[in-house]
Image (cartoon, rainbow, N blue to C red; front, side, top):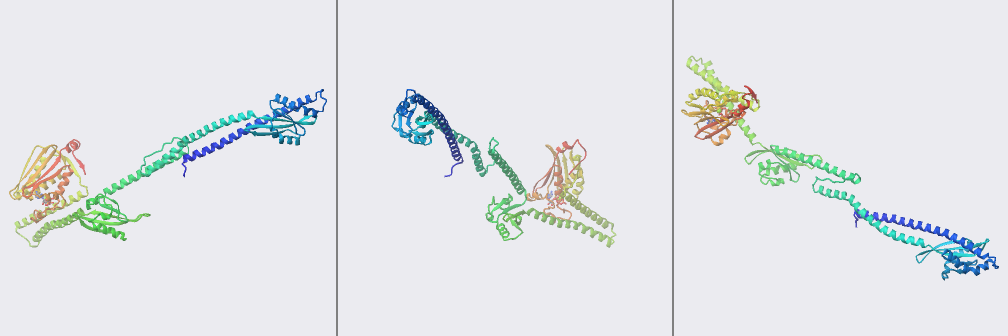
Length: 601
Ligand code: ATP
Ligand code: MG
């Protein structure tokens, strides 16, 4: 059975205490016995001397005629009794042969002195023997009776060490009580003391368990700076470090998750067994599979499994394009090789739909631009060829030809200007020179300018306006906006139509609407016509005069937005089109008083 640390401590301390206690008891008993025995030796010596002196006086009494030895034999009993009375002890008198002459108590146990007596006889010296009889310590003492340098006989004392016995008995009782108390104290102190320094160990164990369960917000409190204190401090330091590392990892994880979430591509990291290590939200967007656990969760996307299989079979790089859920997706697969780690795999899914769309738009644009450039150039070259080669004399033909060359030249210039504008927008280097301007004046000028073009198509432009506050804007660019919109309106109006241009103030906005009664724009097309290069396909079939690059409304939108405004279409096929431009007046309040001219990007 494995004893607990506390129980072991209790046992060790009890053993230690018992050992110390026994040593103390032993020393005490030995010391006490030594003291009492020495004291009794002195006393017995003194008693022997007194008795000898007394017997010498009695034996040398002048009335005594007999020899000293005979005298001793006859007075032996008397001596033993009288000395016993004086010394308050049992006294025995022996002759020189060891025969008992007198015993003050007359007990039959005289043979207990036999050994001492014979030893004393042999050595002619006192013999002292301590015996324990019936739990009583008794000293048997025999000494020669030496008178006139002759040993007349022997005197024996039976001297009980009563005081010593009493003392030792009381001491035993006291020591037993003390021992028991001490033992209890030892147990008590050990238990409470062990609690004192076992508690931090228990805390450490508990906290280790909690750390194991993933709880790292813990500290152990221990106020003493001893070894346990050092241990708890080290442990607390370790927890703090773990916490810091966890926080670091957590922030790294969040950063990584943020990076993954902000990547515009779908991402799948897969381990060797096909388990998904990481995926981002695009996976759900592209494949409608949420939280995939393995590559096999992509039930309907066998191409992903194929890429995974190829990578597993050692292919280093896979790139393929597929059509999936109306999207054009580029799949790029590659292994993730990290030293010391198993090989994993990554599949990046890039949505190429809009890129392909733009490519398509650009392709259309290039062919459209080439076509647009080609048409006026062919006309110009045709006319100049005719004028130079054929020597035309008719001034009317010459005049008409030069007019056509001029018109086509302007058309070319407009196209090139638009292309340059788009290029600048794309590079974000378009500068605006903003001034406080009167939009009514601006629109009047545009309408007047466009009226010529309108009348050529037999179209009338009506312009009405409230009185409007000034707005902050780029005069030339805003003119370009309305020229474009009105130009479109003319282009798509039928002969004899009216175009209504109305400017008004609405809350803190100036609202300009250009309403025509042409073919209108379908809802699908409405979403597209602000895209660069976009033109409604059938428009291209119109006469070369009507053609455009599809850049007009794109440029218009960019300019309006740079004025913090917006552009909307209200249109239905066959019902005509209303293009509404809204520009905030707020900008005047902000910039109005400050400067006449401002340049912003
Ligand atoms: P550009 O203006 O560059 O010479 P464009 O006029 O064809 O060429 P946008 O002004 O951008 O190009 O117009 C895009 C398309 O929107 C046009 O091709 C046309 O089909 C359609 N559209 C624009 N305005 C109208 C309108 N008022 N009525 C009908 N369709 C319109
Ligand atoms: Mg246009």
